[in-house]
Image (cartoon, rainbow over all chains, first blue to last red; front, side):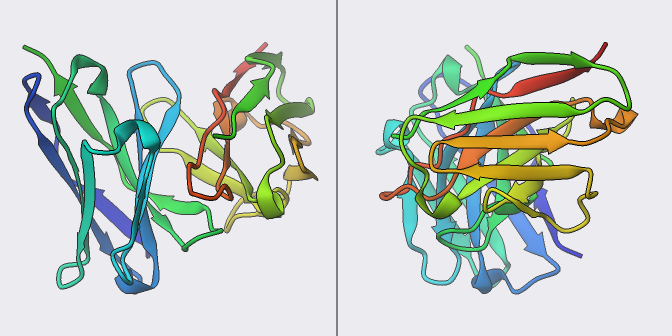
Length: 119
Length: 110
């Protein structure tokens, strides 16, 4: 069965970076992409971007351009999301999700990773 | 950026009733690339509907989606206790990609 297992919770200081991992299993990793979505406490969902595991192409949300980098390691079927220059309003649960490519929705989701930014 | 506006913000209904949730887009959604997700407290979102009207794998047929262009609807024909949750719509067709979500509709037990 399709599973996405994310790394554990993180606490970071303002200005630091965080890198969240998402290990996929149960399907051919390079046939899909990985989306990243975050949710601030008590708030709605915010799309961050996605990466094609086939060719590494990325699309990022405009508001995060320059601070976010998404990568994949096809040898371990793992996707990564790095967010730099963290601010308090980056405190959120970060989700990865499997995406079938352009024009496809996010059909399986990871369990989420809480990132807390606090001095 | 396509802005999605969901209404109502909160919907109070009883089990067995019919729920109708709305999602309106600020501009036409390409090829009906509109999805609906359900989220329960402490859980990840779950895909219900994609392509505006196709049910995802394992989703009961009491969930249905409709609409095109700028107006979309999620209907739950007869509410079960497990259906009370927050529902989000998302468009995933914009170019360049900026796949926005609506702000959510909370479906609560009356």
